[in-house]
Length: 527
Image 1 (tube, rainbow, N blue to C red):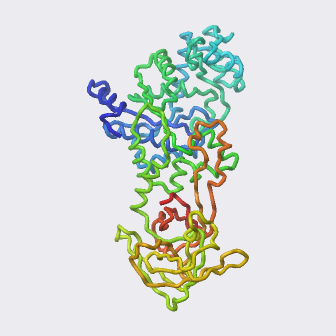
Image 2 (image 1 turned 180 degrees about the vertical axis):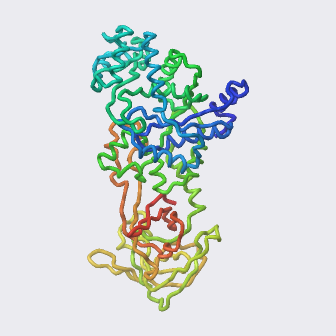
Image 3 (image 1 turned 45 degrees about the vertical axis):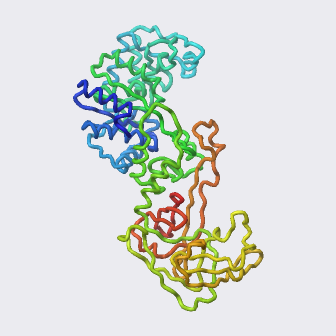
C-alpha cells in the first residue's frame, strides 16, 4: 500500500500539512451480528495502519443498535480476530450504546426543530410511500403532527406504550429527493429485546444511519473510512450532523469493497448457508471469514500481506483467489516441515528387498534447523494411486510392465506384475534398484508398511462453482456439492514427533494437523 499514490493517504497528508487536526483518529465499527470476513480484514488493516503511521489512534467501536441480531459471542470473536491479525486494541473498546442518552436528546432536539416526526404508518406503507428511483415519494399523513404531539408520542415510545412496528420516528427531509435515503428515513424504532449492554433500560433504538455519524462525531473521528456501498448515505450523515448542531464534523471517505472469486461475504447469506446446513458454522474452513481462514490454516501474515498488496481505490473489482493463495503458500513454505502422506494408497510388494533399509530425510529442504527424520524402505510400501495413471488413461489395468518410478529419497522401482481380483488391483509386484540422482524418472512419494499411520483427510475445495458468485441472485443453485471430500489414507508416523500443526505433504500440498481421538489433517492448499 503506497502512501504516495494512495488517495486516502494523500488526503491525510494534506490535512496534516494544513494543521487541520491535532491527532488523526480512525475507527473500525463492526456490528456484532456475525463473524468478521476477509473484507473486514482489509478495513482493519487500513484503519489500524493509518493510526500507527501517523501516531494517531483507531477506535474499535461495536455498533450495537439492534439487540435482535447481536450476540456476546460475536463481540468476543471479533476481538479475537483483530488480535490474531496482529493489531493491538490500545484504547478502551467503545460501544454505540455508550451514547444512547445523547442520541435520545438529539432526537428530541430534531423534533423541537420540526425536523423529525412520529409516524404511525405501517412498515409496508412507509416503504410504499417512499417511492422508487423512478417514482417520487409521498408525504406521510402524519408528517405534520405538532411538536407537542410528536414529543408526547416519542416519550410514549420510550416508555413502552406501543408495539413493535406500530410507530417510529422519522427525520423530516424531502420525500421528493432523488436520493431515496433522504426520503424521511427512520431514525428510531421500537425493539423489545434485552440489550447486551443496557439490558432492559431502552425499548427504542437509533438506526445505524442516525447513530453512526453521531458516534464518529462524539469520538472526534477525523477520517471515517468505509466501503463504497455507504457512499449514498453520506448526504444523510451530513444532514444529521448539520441539524443537531454538533461541533466536530467527521469526514467520510469511501473505498472499494473486497470481493474474492468463488466466495461471498454477506452475513445474511452465510447465515442462510448455516441454517440450511450447507456449512457447519461461521468457522467453516470453506468460508473466508477470518475464523474460517484461521481454522483452515491461513496465517495472519499472509492475510496482512495480501491486504497490503491491494492498495486503496474507488474502483470495484473482484480479486482472484489465487492472489491471496500466493501469499499463503509463501508463508507456509517457510514454516512447514515436510512429510509423506498418501490419500489413495496402492500396495506395492518389492520382490528383491530382503532386509529393511533406513533412509535419512530432511524435515525441510532449506531449513536445517528443523532437523531430519528416519524413514524405512521395506518389502511392502504404498504409493499414490494417481501416480500410476496416465493423464488420458484412467484404467489402472493397462499399466505398462517395466514402467519405472524413482522413490523419493531412495532408488528405482520397476513394475513386474499387477495382481487383480474382480477387476480391482490388490497389489503390484515391483523390482527395486539402488539408483540415486536420476532425473529422467518420475519422482513419487511413498510410505512403508512399518512407517504408515492411518489417517483421515479432509479435502476442501471452493464452496461455489461460479467465480463471481456475489453477483448471482440465486447463489444457492451454484453450491459446489463436492466442496468437502473425506478420504481415509495413510501418513508417515514421524508426524507424531512434529510440534508444528501446519505441515507439507510432499507433492500434495499444505495441511493442518488436528490431534483428537483420531488424527485428522485438513487440506489448506495444494502446492
